[in-house]
Image (cartoon, rainbow, N blue to C red; front, side, top):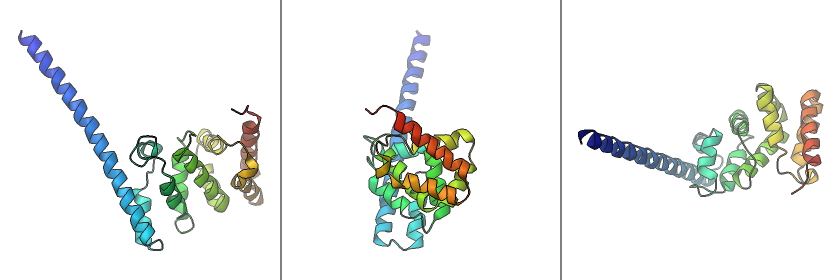
Length: 198
């Protein structure tokens, strides 16, 4: 009888511990979402304030798991368009931080509608405007991760003519003498265009 009571008590404590961890994780996500909302509001009120810019960069997710926990379907900031757009708009004044974060996010990214598509577009825009920095970040990665990012930038693309940023990355890469990486972009685009359309 004592063994049954002990087992039941351990089971109840285990369930309670799991519930507390889940609730704590949801609270952490809600707190992170609220911090990002506040940071975006500050940035929108004072877009040229470097303190507001840094606060927003700090509040923005820096790994793909955190990105999904905030912006995926049913999550606190579902869709994420205005958040990703605001983040990428800081590329001119914070090239290192924005480029590094976008590249880091893309190493794990999987294409989907909404936030992952906005991440893809923001990264392509950054790469087309800051090609030298973007290429230095890509070249610092292992070949597999670099290939993943290049392929991610082609996923879901139906019409590359309507996606001029991708071609600009190739053109700028060639102009910088980075023909090998430009060729990787071209191969990824060719592979994508040869895939059957849904």
